[in-house]
Image (tube, rainbow, N blue to C red; front, side, top):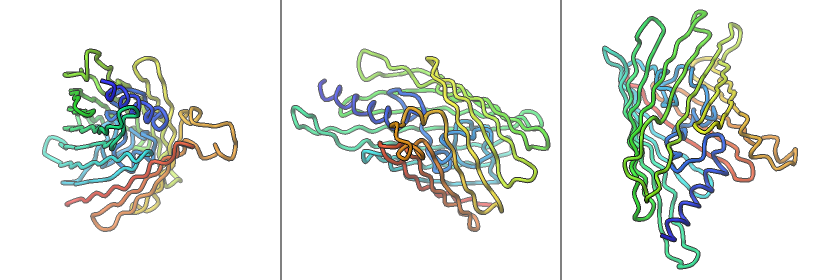
Length: 300
């Protein structure tokens, strides 16, 4: 039990210092961005159309069949991997995503025994249009979390709506995430899921080659987050992204030069033929960077 407590404290410490943009829960993988684009947008931009998994599956747009994969390097040598696909059908878009985070090998400070931890998340997606420009999306999630010999299982669902007006220049969306329950807990105490509700707004100016977005995230327990992002797309083949939010104030040290880029996320995307390569970075100040590489391939 002592090993379990030590490892749980380590995982919670990691998320406190590196994911204050999100909530702090034992099942944070449920709200972690899994692609370079999402990390470059700080988990925001949920009302903007995309072919990458995000916090509102109602925004997904693909022409036929798309495959994607990526690797994420977190601080403390923690590594995430994601693989997904989306396919357009007669009734909508279906998809599946496998996302895992490996926390590596730790050592008990008293016994010097080593132990490991890993989260594996499976998501099944569906998106369709129900009226003109109004789209609806849903995801069913299954999470298996391992801490040494202890296992926890979670089943949850995400729901989202998206619409656009002003000739599709103003986009609006709402989503609810992680509505579900813990099927099996680590011990006698049942942890709470990181339930959250998101309102997103995006605007594409007439004489500006990009999209401005603002997202408001409300977590269960009254925790709130604001995220602002800009996604440049001058020619359809090259994208630049930058974002930040009020989470940055929880990461600052008080030194102007040390804090000037703290909480900033940025990235770029390059499309050649049917292949897109995305990179993303997120600065957590003294805690370090999150670095991501994602690749997706579209079959037309």
